[in-house]
Length: 180
Image (cartoon, rainbow, N blue to C red; front, side):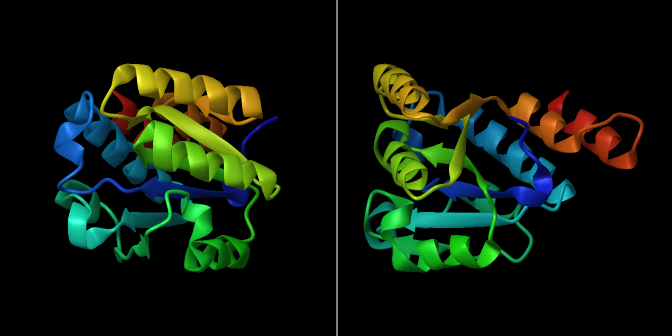
């Protein structure tokens, strides 16, 4: 099944200042997430950002905030984004089928969001090199669980080119520059 940009929304989960430095390979994950955001904006895929308990974990990292045109976020206290009614309503309003997931932590908020999305009829697409956890083993097992449950697992470069669909366009050139 092909993932189509017109039927996709992306979610950036909890990439927050106080949590991020504790994440395995956080600098690479942050860099990958900002490139993903750049590419999704080139492709006009809507972005939804969440923050888990901002009072304790701080705001979204400035590298993310500065990339998103008209930045806003949905505050949540549930681990699953889908457990937050504002998030659920936002997805319903957007009316998209594919939900592209990035963020932290893979084995908690990303996993639980993925499972709830599957149960609710969405098709989650987890960008493996744009998610992480404090411990590599937790990420590994969570990715496997999501795969077993029916989520699509992909990479930054793969999803951006899949959404782009063809070469020789200005969009393709922009995406190519991002992944190099």
